[in-house]
Amino acid sequence: MNTTKACATVCVIGWAAAATFGWIALAAPPGESAGLQTLNMLLAAAGAGAGIFSWIRIRQGC
Image (cartoon, rainbow, N blue to C red; front, top):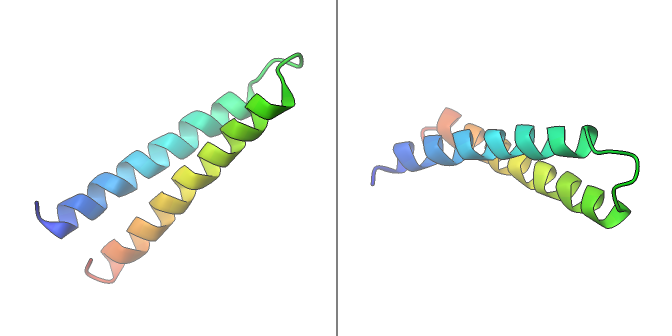
């Protein structure tokens, strides 16, 4: 697989995970456990980190 395609795939998946888990964390009902909310926030942050890192790699030519 071409590395540019791999970076683009990781970028899309990372931002999709950030949006999905971020929305789940924000739209959680008040009775949801703190551990589950924390897990959703960590997964959203990891997705955003992967998206940012891969975007920087794409901008530099991957």
